[in-house]
Length: 176
Ligand code: HEM
Image (cartoon, rainbow, N blue to C red; front, side):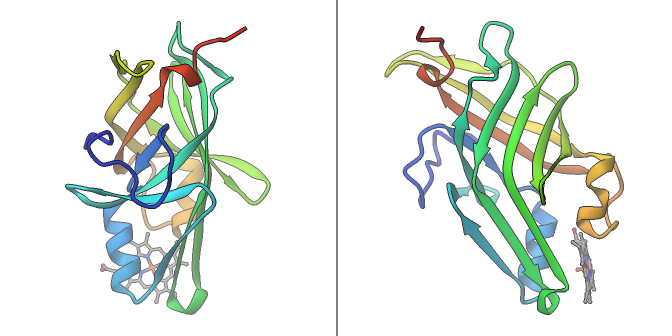
């Protein structure tokens, strides 16, 4: 999945991350008559794997483009609701924290919770229109801290969907 080939259809964002979270969870929620809502700077994107969620880049000041480490903070929320509201899970304001062990965290209430481990590889850099950094289809796996969010159904380490990120270089290059 290359998100430059699948620009967001419901947002005007040009830097952001694309993630289906977990395809079987989307099938489960929609197949049980549930609904998936999109809020804020989240949107949807068509990919070959189906519709994915898009979160716009909010803040890259914690990311160091020299070492490719630190935090890319995205904004927006995806709300899953099913079984008459018994199932209610929101994926809110995801961050990708690149480090020795890279992670995706989300806001759960007022706490930031590690959701998935990311197997990060270096991004590609395409010059032109200021330059674009792109990470394509990085594998992700569920963190133990997020097992309760999915009703303890998935076990820690289970494969989630791959994540892709597209960042305009001007957003991460220091200007001062
Ligand atoms: C009235 C409440 C609920 C009922 C009747 C229910 C029922 C079910 C059933 C029948 C399945 C199997 C679906 C299949 O194999 O296709 C399932 C799977 C699942 N349920 Fe629930 N559930 C309920 C609440 C919840 C809650 C609160 C969560 C928390 C997020 C949850 C998360 C899941 C997950 C993650 C799966 C596995 C989906 C997959 O990847 O295939 N469920 N549930």
